[in-house]
Amino acid sequence: MEYRKLGNSGAIVSAYCLGTMTFGAESDEATSFRLMDDYVAAGGNFIDTADVYSAGVSEEIVGRWLKSKPGILRDLVITTKGRFPMGDGPNHLGLSRKHLNEALDASLKRLGVEHIDLYQMHAWDALTPLEETLRFLDDSIRNGKIAYYGFSNFLGWQLTKAVWLAKANGYAPPVTLQPQYNLLVRDIEHEIVPAALDANIGLLPWSPLGGGWLSGKYKRDQMPVGATRLGENPRRGQEAFEPRNAKSATWDIIGAVEDVAKARGVSMAQIALAWVAVQPAVTSVILGARTTEQLQDNLGAVSLTLTTEELEKLGGVSKPIVGDYPYGAGGIGQRNRKIEGGR
Image 1 (cartoon, rainbow, N blue to C red):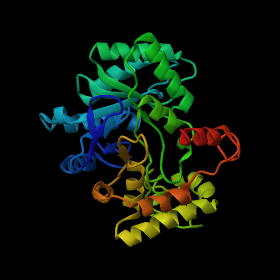
Image 2 (cartoon, rainbow, N blue to C red):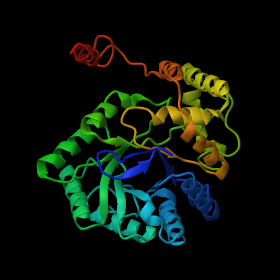
Image 3 (cartoon, one colour):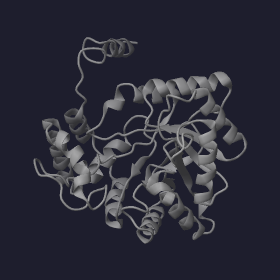
């Protein structure tokens, strides 16, 4: 397993992180324990959860697993998130000091730990002043409840605003951002990736397989059947299937992944994961396995290095389509790239 710095911090994490959104839902506790055992055995040291995953059950399962492995906590980096509703009251959600104080304490209790290595804000909150959130996070670092903090699902301007507000007020800086990123969803490359690179923020991509699409499980014009990442009911995936199926680009990308996978004699999932892992600013790719078989296949990407030709093929077919302005040939972004290239 390759290890990398956790964004701009001094902590070290494995290049592949174990996501636990399935714990307590699609994966029962026994299966979840085996997933964590297998992941650690493969050299992984980074486990990602959130308070809303299975309404707190995911954190509880991780906590019981940690308790069953005396001494293992010092070898791991644990991250969780807060932001979304954990109750029916008006203050049971958001990034206010009131909610985050309660959410963080509840996560610590469910995980059975004294501090959390990386605490992530699960999404932007337009109602709470960002200064309030950042002050709470800085205070939480100072009082030892968290070591670092980051964000998830923030836009580029939101990330940059947070970075500079923290700097202006003397707060600890954010170290990571967790966005959706895969060969089918590359729009973060317009603003979010440049913002992360500018601030030395590490990206932790979620859904690197595009909800299973890049594993080859879906067929063109055929509604999904059987179990999916969202559970045993295939209808839960149909709302996403129809618009994605209608795009010819979707099948061009899937076809390219399949071609590279067949030529290398590996699974499509391994090719898709290996592509994400080497993209600019990426620190660790989040694996969202439901079964031990899926995890073992995903971990095959650990030892896979794509060639320049393979990267060019995959990057070319999946390149985001943009108009002329502001990112295209006649836009500001293109002119800036020409200026930078001429220096």
